[in-house]
Length: 74
Image 1: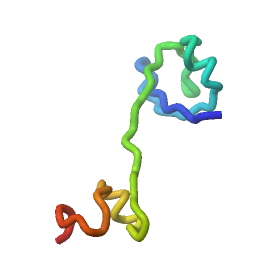
Image 2: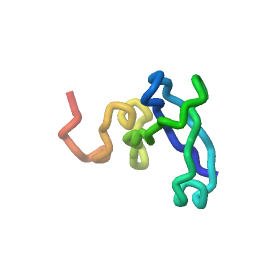
Image 3: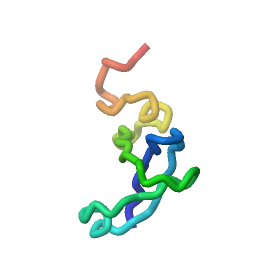
């Protein structure tokens, strides 16, 4: 099952949950793991995209153009 990131708008807790795509699609409420409130919102995070030969450090710094790209070289 996919992981989804949420933030509670009441207490500010950020948490991850696993739920089926059907549960996500039907909009079933998600309770905060900190306070139990259903006043939560989904958090969208950027994903690290790398290419063959790129290091994990490059991907975490946002360098996803590939090794031939000069835009992220120092």
